[in-house]
Length: 284
Length: 292
Image (cartoon, each protein chain N blue to C red):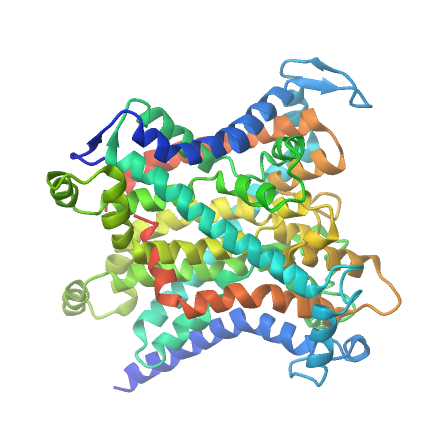
């Protein structure tokens, strides 16, 4: 019996070490963000929250020159929201329509079009970043939400999620719908969308996180400060810190990492079950 | 494909059109330009360019700094993949085994999924900051003459550590759901036949997890290749001396900072071919080795 007890203790010890490994950096980042710049410079990182929470976060979010020269933290938060939500919704609509065509229709160009969509998985944006930038700049779309979001939708991950999901839906449904004389559009709206609710929710969550976390594309796409997202703010504050100044504002850098982390983490935690389901579905 | 399908001439094209139009404008066009540019050599002012066949490719592959980046990318990908898979598998097995607190463990181990790589990078960067970073001080205190700004091994260590930290949670989620998918009956039968939990794991559980593991390897290699861009950009920036450049980071560096469009495009195309080759190997491998 004692043998089994030892095993339980060992399991919990390993898990606790894992939890500490995963959580401690974020906890330290949060604690440190609530101390003053002087304290951090004198004493280093902080493991317990200090008294400067409201001061630092108010400065970062609402005061001009708090982090960037002109843009407020709250504006960056808004830009991140637009990117995350716009990307998620755009992706779900575009990829659901495409997956519907691929799975439910017989048409001549189905195979070549499928392969074109598949091709996008091989060549992420990072690799074709410069020509992509040139195309978007040529179309006059720099610093616009459209130019920021739409090129990101070009990759086909969402289409494959929905394709897998549609393939798992019983064929009898379509047969029955056709006997009742349903048009393709009716079948899509009245049967397929209601059936896909959980899947849509899961993909919205995953894509929100993916959109929110975009880095390289917004970095080169946005030239005006007012269009920065929080994740881009990270890059800027990193540069300010590495250039060095009078008194490095480490607490603001940490506050910014917390602000950039919080919304996607909350979404994932809040919709945990849907999110896990959606993520794991994608494997099949 | 479904056996029963709609037969229609134009409707499917309307449904698939948004995706195809976006792909054509923002994927095919730039990709074609990358291939086109990779055969061109621009003069110093970018005013004229001439067709130079495969010169950019030979220059790329012959370049010592490219080969250094290729080597670093290989080592980096292998380390990140195996370490993050190993840690995640260990945690998932334990989280699947415990009864008390299972849900809390699951939540606290998976939430880091939502953190952006550059955010993780900046956090790590500050943890390793020479002035305030406790990890920096700790490593120096235990006698490791640690300086990731100057020493390329130390810089690699920082980048690998952050990249692994960021990736554990995804792998954990997949492993845990893979473990939960193994039927109770199989586990109980195994318990009758074999007393040792370790042997049971390697002979029964692990082979049953093979499809998940394989899928995750693909995901992790892709991650190490592409998504770690944000981590490298906010920690080492490829320094010291380009020793922590991955191939993707180098494409960006040479194209944007160095304004070497032809060379950067040739690198993109080479990278694309590497990814293509990896994909083909994956599909071959899936068919032969992994039984679903």
